[in-house]
Length: 193
Image (cartoon, rainbow, N blue to C red; front, top):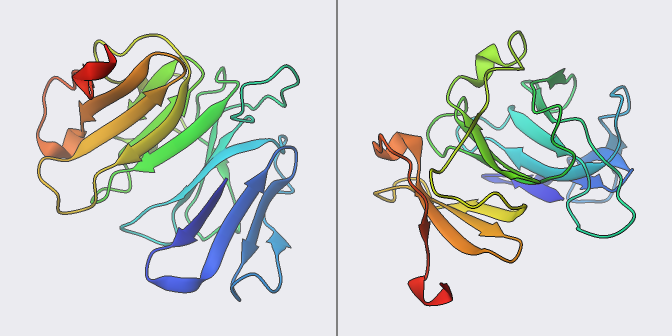
């Protein structure tokens, strides 16, 4: 997993299978480990909040579906550009392959897991109530591993989350901040059905 910081062409984060999270601030000349104090090293996803470059989310658990997996223990959040981390839930998710932070709200997060998409609109409560701050997202989304997750760019109306499932197609789900009250998943394009 790899991500950059929007508007900064020298700062990047990289996470590897059993390799932890690494950060560079000089476009890759020097990499420093920033996740060594956490109990898990298998990284499946990393995302920097588009609205705040100090907020980083890490999904643990190798995202490749294969016979020899390094499992994870959920999602971690840093609010200081990787200096410290807080475990924020989804402990039972063994594989996290994608994280999308809402383009306008760093407290609204969507996570691709081994059984679907989970989301929270109040990520600030996850450190104290990790077991119940996350909920399945996208009514009608099949229970299948979600192997890819992406959102429409900030300012695009309506905002859409696209979830690629393992063997079950691509699905579109309206983002919470797009004003959707139902968050119903629809197969897209419909020719895949």
